[in-house]
Image (cartoon, rainbow, N blue to C red):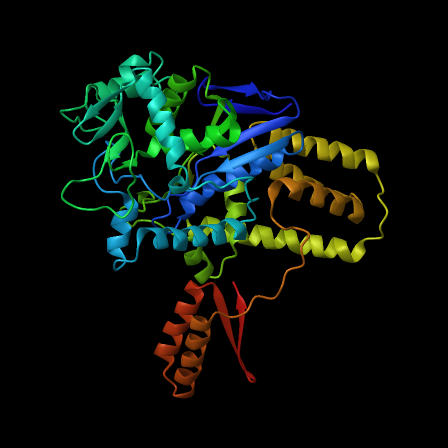
Length: 464
């Protein structure tokens, strides 16, 4: 039976779905105002391993939302919508067109990392009616109040508010250490369900409602969409650790106040990927994208392997040295698999040993998604004296969890156009005996993880 760490209870628990044989899971998707950075993508990788693990036991219905409106630049319900800000930043392209552009790019990265596509990917802008209906229920039950800028949720009327984040977080709010206090808010922890459009300008994304021309708050979006597709009570809700204190805490409050039922039975959160300079942030511009790694000669699955080497609940500090190690380790693994394929004869030699190692591997995956230990089981069997056919059968099984395309034949990777230009420039410098420029260009190529070798027939290159 799978066991996962439940953020709500602060302990590992046996996972038992609400409906036998079936599982519902909601994962917070991207806010499509910019590229996803590799820290964001680490969360989707751990969630993918979780879904793959659950599918060994259950029929899984997985919903991941697309936030294309309502996510403001401040956690305290102030500032502009990130979509509108991005629209202005990128020369006035419409917010809706911008959302489509970054959503497409997100799914390019999502697919490149071998993440399995969710059952549903609802867009916030397509579920305004559901949000309005949910707010009307909360209003009727007395959980809301009106200010000059929107309809707010009164957290004092929900006794268990903050159970997910913990007492210290709520005390911090009261002290004013986490969120600026608005004079119209009754309590520092109150949050916007619906925001009024400014009277002095027209927003690109706004809708008529019982309260006037408005747009949704970020938190109400996930509650409305998750419950539409998965029902009032979800088995699992996932996201990054940064969502615990505000976004997920507010989801619980508004959802349970509306339905009178438990909203989520198990909360699972992934920790940050950090740079040596600190946490990645799209708003500050301090982030790396998957394309940036590609341009340096890395395959997206090199990054996936790096992430699998650390437990999802531990912070992972990113460096190119650690990515190099992951890349070389994955390449070594695939080379061994290629050798086993040459040795295969189609006959399993030790079926009992194979079943035992499969069971050991699955136990690691089901023990709170322990991918580092699972990789250790994989490597131990790869290095064992087991027959090549047995090893290949195990690799195929393990990769149904890991998603590293281990059995796929690798295609030769071509030379990027910018690298080809540098090699041509270097050859010209060498012909002119400008060895300083030649050495500088070699160094530039090495930064791109490309090794050049000078031969009588010309320059040869290879991936580092």
